[in-house]
Image 1: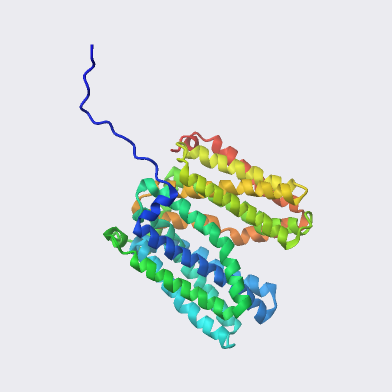
Image 2: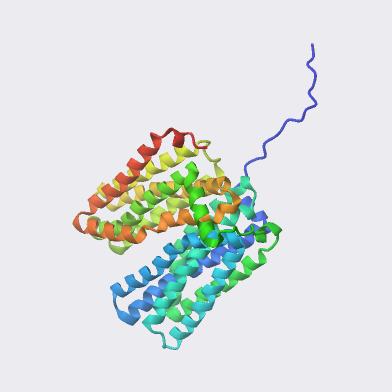
Length: 419
């Protein structure tokens, strides 16, 4: 007997978009170009600032204090920047920070080109850099859900992460070439030009009402919004766990990479600056591979197991690098470890963007960045003291922190069931 044919339409799941498919969106194209220009501008200033301070003072201590002066307001104001992104929309916050950057860097470039720059002006610009970074970074991370569809977040984040990795390689090289060929002043001029052009693309981004549809501010004002953001993030188990994991991983990894790797390259591996560059390059290549893979392969259904795996993967990798006797195997392990960072930076950010209340996007992203960057100065200081005594111990402590974190998360049913 023939079965009747059902007239009910069967839902067909749309195929997962590939990373390059997001370029079909004019809005994403503008965001991508604008943020890429800002990344290159950042690296122009990193090279130029370091060279300028050393030219003026010849002191590594002075360079360190300039970096601290920049890092402190960036960390202190990061949550404020996130609240402003939620209050005035990410696009307007990005525009304001990019405009301020260009307006302050251009006069510095002129002072350097005319030979009139003084150290107090350098310190002042460093403070400005820290302030505008605190406004720009949360806005850049929270604008994406307004630009692309939810199902395209992994693909879009993969493109942005791969671009960021490329800028880490190409930005300092191009900035160094400009400094060597034309001088520090022109590198600062390039920074200002990059942010002016980026400003134009973000201004051009006004293609939909949602981009500039800010939620009415609460009665408590900016301070109340910050407190509300903190309560929201800590009260949501997935966001709270993510913040803890980011803080643990970056506190350990940043010190091990920035302090431990050059110590290993110079001492045990006898590979000098070239060896240090190879190790960092391997990490960058791995991160790029991880980001591309996460943009193509669907995310795991259990996000909790993903963060457990990342903690264990990175912990084992960092621990192994500190124990290995020579450069080639350490390079291989750095590359494999980098895959984990590229993967989690794509899946994890997409998961947070999708999970977070749209009205809280800026504040949550600012807390993620604060967890990542806020402890960096302390991590550098502690890592330097440990590495001075025993560099292997530094890697053992950093890797051990991540392994303990991963095992602790795996023991939590709430974490294991996160989706």
